[in-house]
Image 1 (cartoon, rainbow, N blue to C red):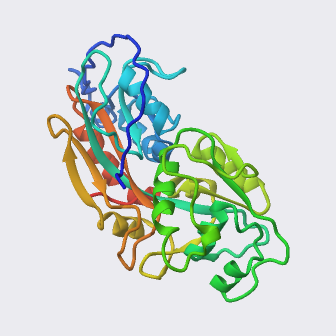
Image 2 (image 1 turned 135 degrees about the vertical axis):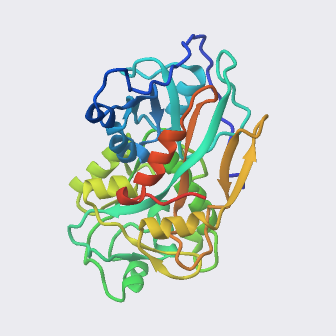
Length: 341
């Protein structure tokens, strides 16, 4: 299965001025003023997975970032049409789903794609009635997300944890309502892991793969990773998928998931990075200006967190984002992200 897919884009005619990358240093500044100067990089939109990371970078870089989901962010980037509330110039986008390489920017502007951090898509849950160290095997989390396991007292979940988890606590799954890279990473994994030996036929993933998929109609939904976290926090019996940085911000526990090697793994920068190291770095596009990491749907490393992916930064090729990328990579581990090759 390819780790990307084509998206239909509505190309809107628009114009955008060439962005000048400001150094923020002017003649006459004191040493203290220079140390506090910020670099203007233009504005961006896209994946909510990097909201915490980009918020941390605002002390060094001047920009506005709209976390409207990977799909909407990419559309805004390629059409050069900033989302409502985001002023021009739109200079970059972030996505957990790499582009196919056939997409064109309105007006013909070139662009670059670089993996900046790696993310773990956690199965975070409401703490009422459930233990903090909850373990979920593949059979269990595949069944929960497929809608075939409906109560926390299911024998599969009890077997994972060596004891009965709940007497009668209905499971309430919370999913993304918008076009989301987190959904892409999760569904790519489910499509691979939920068809392996040990997963009952009723628990095999049937929702498809993409930034939007087919969910059970009784599931709850919310727009944006932060909102999904809020619904989980306020709903007894809830479980849903959010990236690790968002989970930490919302102070939600995450289930330990059984990986391909058979180990129950807690999400962490180290376990996410271990998963990414199993991937294959690929350069592609007309001028080999795009980079993605393939073979991440079901990492084989014994210490790998199983639902992991890369978040990509896309920016116009006439701009300089080296300083921003370097700062992002340096800040990532302390916020719950993994590294990239």
